[in-house]
Amino acid sequence: MENGREIVSRDMAEMTSNIGEKIRRLSGSSLLVTGGAGFLGYYLINFLVHANESLAEKCRVVCVDNFIRGVPRWLKEFAGKKKVELVVENVNRLDAAALGDLDYIIHAASIASPTFYRKHPIETMDANVIGLRNLLDYSAAQEEKRRPVKSFLFFSSSEIYGDPPPDHIPTPETFRGLVSCTGPRACYDESKRYGETLCVNFFRAKKTPVKIARPFNNYGPGMRLHDGRVIADFCKNILHGEEIRMFSDGSPTRTFCYVSDAMTGYLLLLLSNHDGESFNVGVEKPEISIKDFADLVARTAEKQLGLPRVKITTQKNPDDKYLVDNPERRCPDIKKARELLGYDPKVGLEEGLRRTLVWYRDNMEETA
Ligand SMILES: NC(=O)c1ccc[n+]([C@@H]2O[C@H](COP(=O)([O-])OP(=O)(O)OC[C@H]3O[C@@H](n4cnc5c(N)ncnc54)[C@H](O)[C@@H]3O)[C@@H](O)[C@H]2O)c1
Image 1 (tube, rainbow, N blue to C red):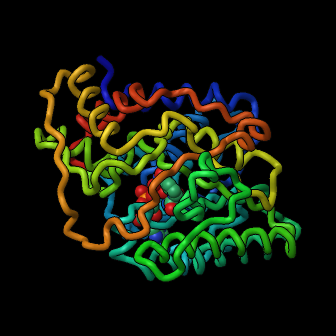
Image 2 (cartoon, rainbow, N blue to C red):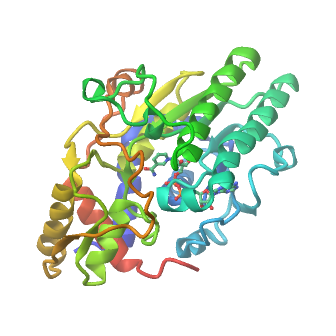
């Protein structure tokens, strides 16, 4: 059976084949990745390191993170890698001009887990508003210097849609959202919405080549086991031999997109010319209830990893606001990304869960 490292290597090879010739555009370029020590940062930096093996001229990758969510153990994998630089800094205060001329900016810094963004609501808002503005200002200044950035990717979220009514499921990019501006999740949802407004106005007023990704529940290697997102929680329960604890009645539904597929979508968007536009990135099916999902994780662990079958229970989350404004259904319409980017997610849910569980099994100690 593959180990965690082999799974990541295979994912990198699959992503390279999915992205194809477009990857050559990165040759010799400088990329800034904010939030590079986060879950999506893991696959992004891994991919760029992998791409450097075949690019005519290697790209330079500057990873910025303030470690508000801790220092992941996997970060050591990149120590000493040529062309990968780590800057420990808050994106709100980052002096991007001091990093030299940047060709690509990927702004992924923002706590994504509801458990942790509610513990750090102001920091979460600031990363999506002040941090984003800082990077957009840098890009606008570069445009004036006639050394424009080639592309800018802002990580928004499916949460900008709030809790869509059933006739807006699957949810297309044109749905305007049903969101509380003061509820416990608003620090995240509303700062992402404002972030999108900042992006489109920089595009209109200053020609900033900014694209907006709306991720829908990505999962896979690199997500902290103690992240508090549902999939990490369930895998943690299983790998510790505990019962799976659901913090709802299990009826809300989600679609889950494996990280190599999602990251392919983000890179295709970054390398596209769809400036000023937003794209859903996720999968349309299966739309699965949390209860059925818990069953599937338990069955996959038993069948694919030979782990003992665990029970599934319902418990109250210690945070009594945990379920307030929790969307009932979350399912994207991804026609726009399919048609305009050639995005075509391939990894099925059971296979993605197998890869995730194997990676977690081999990476139980997550903090450096
Ligand atoms: N993973 C998903 O399914 C998903 C879904 C919707 C949106 N997103 C968005 O994608 C982006 C990346 O998500 P992720 O899953 O990797 O999140 P994550 O929480 O795993 O990682 C975020 C990283 O950003 C860093 N960070 C936070 N604030 C910072 C700041 N002010 N300065 C510097 N670094 C800072 C954290 O230390 C962390 O390493 C986020 O913007 C998130 O909101 C992700």
